[in-house]
Image (cartoon, rainbow, N blue to C red; front, top):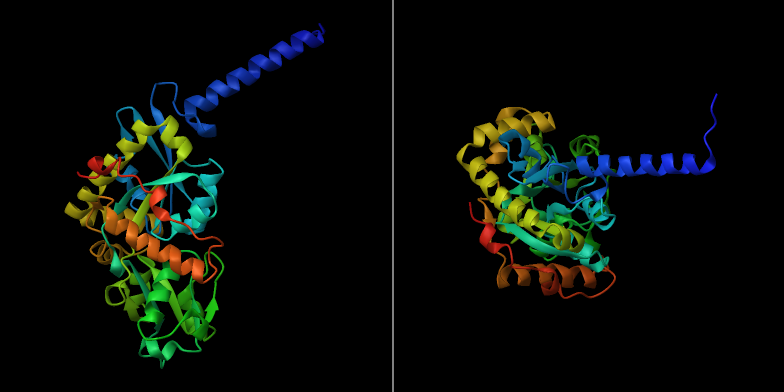
Length: 330
């Protein structure tokens, strides 16, 4: 058997590593900006439970000329997406309006590139259908589930404030990821739950009762899209193309709600009629980033600093960009 010298083994290893690097770049792995065929891969973090992006493949919107959208489904909602963006596992995140506040306070380098119109019916507070609780005032002293530092946290704040209560007037419960809040309500171990669609619509059709949604408590609940500063530096054209594709995708969904709801039902394992009902409550489209958008987000930041949810006071206008407003129209 012929033995190779150490130097030849090192050269072989180097060649192998070079080949591996090329292979990773070709598949868009490792954060590579461009695949072998010249297509830029943009990794978009989302969650199949509420995002628009998970259904991109159902309409072919994950491929657009020289841009390929890699849909990254993350369990854990906004907090998981912020962590992934910070670790450079994704380039863009689809999350609620609260997420960027938490990200900025955590020194994550990003910009808010797009926002949807309000989605007030997409988040609500529910109780079991047999619960004696009939109004928001009845929540005083009760156990309520929410997810800290997310839109559900903001919605609960707004709901309690509307009847003169604060977060200190209730017993806050954070359920582990994947917990079925409806089952916990039925068990009596929880009095109320803050839930997002389509889970909200699913629960309301199967034994839960709505106390409020965002429509009566001034909680707009839009979705925000944030891109890392690294992605904006290396993949700016792809980010702009993503915003344009997103606008087109939402326009398709509003024109063909049955088709998109079928895709949502398949992704989430829920009946198509439930998915369709939830679909009709979704945002109408993208909304240009403007002063009112920034003021609304600053209000969230100020309250969360006051409550100790974020550890430092922030000014949110520095993370907004209007650069992609022109791409936010279908």
